[in-house]
Amino acid sequence: MKFFKSIGWRITIWHSVMFIFVLFLFSGFLYITFSDMLTKKVDSMLARELGLITYCLEKKDSFAEIEQHISGLPSFARVNKEEIYWQIENEQGQIISESHNLHGNRIKRSNLIEKKNENFLVWNTELNGTPIRAMSVPMSPKGNFKYQVIVATYSRILEQSILNLKHILLFLTCCFVGISGFIGWLISKKTLQPIHQIINTTNQITATNLYERLPIKGQEDELQSLCITLNRMIDRLETSFTQIQQFTSDVSHELRTSLTIMRGELDVALNRSRSEEEYKRILHTILEEVIYLSDMVEKFLYLSRDTSNSNQIKQKPVNGVLLLQYVRNHLLSLVTKKQINLNIQTPEPLILYGDEDLLRRLFINLVENAIKYTSIGGTIDIKVSIKKEIIYIEVIDQGIGIPPEHLPFIFQRFYRVDDSRSRDQGGTGLGLSLCKWIIEAHKGSIEVRSEPGKGTIVIVGMPCL
Image (cartoon, rainbow, N blue to C red; front, side, top):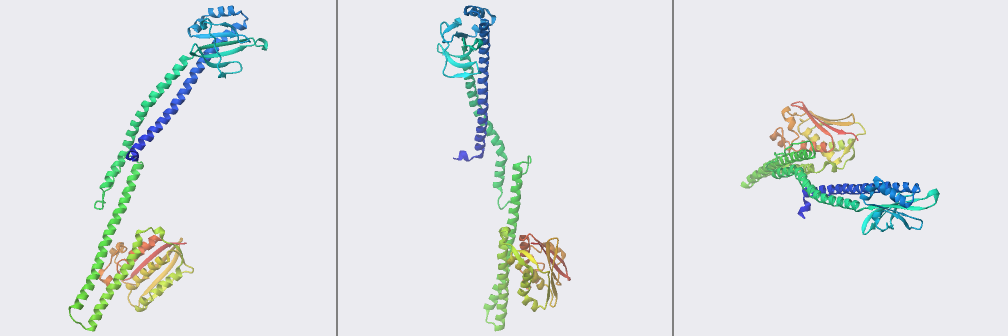
């Protein structure tokens, strides 16, 4: 039912249930305490009057004298007024004396007798159909049983008081159930009002207005923390949407450029018959664009992992020496073609911790970039050092360098310092972006230092195993 799915009504119900539970506990405690207090008061009165009668008996007065003596006491007038009855029984249970207001009736014993102490017995019985409470005590001069003195009084006042209290508590309970439900509803409405505002504001935020944020106001409570958390989530969504839009735009531009070049060359080739050399030149141009697109698609596959959890990357110990040797062998054709001197200086053993495939891609990209922008006959150095449990791997070239104004942007996707020159070198603008993601996935760091005309230093920092 929709009724029970509402948090507001659930809060109201729970508030009412808890309030009623506490009220029942309090009412039960009050009922038991009040009943016990009235019972003790009645028993105390009976014990007092019982003591008065036993005192007279201990003086060894005759029963007539006892009755005359007790009737003449000022307190006995109050006893009769309060409808207190008494009777004295012998060993055989025969009544040998009784109060006048019994009118020949007998205070009967009950099957349920409560023993107050060694001598006093208390029980509830009836007199002429009216409930009474009785108390008795034996009189045993010199240890021999002689008399049984019984005193009783009407318990209807006691029972009526307890019954009235029960009715009052039930009435108050019913009243407080409604009051507690209303108060619970007000509390839930006041408590959930900010949440409804958050829901309304959140529903208004779409992909076209991700710049909007939830208002943060009020006390520093859980709702404010919720607003802050949601705003941070929206920040991340806005950043992601912006990156996706930029990425889509950049990919479209790159694909359109390459496809335009290939289409133009094919149009030229089909326009009229051409020589074998011209066809080879056209096919060579198309092949370069196909290689460029293949390289870009390959890097897209790596960058697509950027949307996944980097914690899912399988990391294990990797032999760093063998890894760098693999990079050199992989790029040996490029190094030989440009007659570049590639030096690797690394301590042994060198153990890296990470995904071996990704680390290979990282250093292949960095060394390949260094080769592209290093002049023929130049030198590239790869130096490894360990400082404060951090492994630093430096790729140093003597290439053309990077102007300072471009350094903050070189890790952005498709960013090129010189677009035409980068395309001539076969660059896609994705290599350094991919390197940055790989090193961040390994909880490392990457830094680029460069001066135009002097070369570039790329410093990769990785935590030791």
